[in-house]
Image (cartoon, rainbow over all chains, first blue to last red; front, side, top):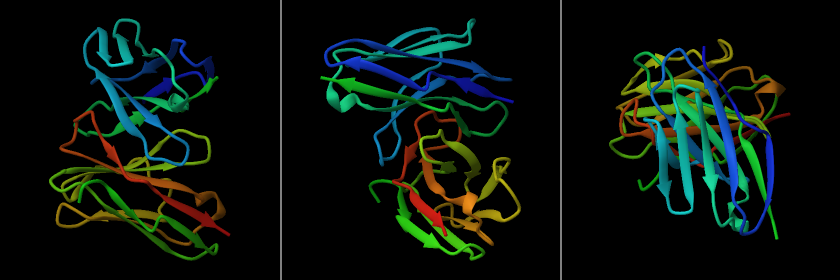
Length: 111
Length: 114
């Protein structure tokens, strides 16, 4: 089976940096993805890591360590609009393409 | 269309009734996924289609749930004899092909069973 763990809530102030961690247990591994979901909205893709290291996309960066089965999403220069839920996801092993999602981390950005 | 379209956006049904939820994926996307999201919870995988076939339907909670996809495009998720615990947002997503990491989600159908 596969499972992902991430903190349920994180709070930070505008302009700060926040890190959202994700640990996973999978029988096979095909990369770690991150999605953002605003309240009442659809999840939207943020980033993907297949190899170890840091991927940067603007204010957002994502890191992966396959040996530690661990990744994180780093959000810099936080803005109020970053208040949302953030989900890590892994593609299942085998020949199916389903994405298994974590329970999500609710980020609250305060002024 | 430009994005994944789901209908209806909201559905209120009486316990015991059947409901059908529709998903129109992005044109050309061969992979299609259904997820269920309860309030404040994560995304629970239901079923995955590659083309018209479903190589993985392991997430369907019971035999009251079924799904089909026709023409490699539109998919319908059917819930028979709805129960109150079926109340949730049902999300559909599509991707260019299976195994592609970026999935595009629709706005979901909010199902309320009363």
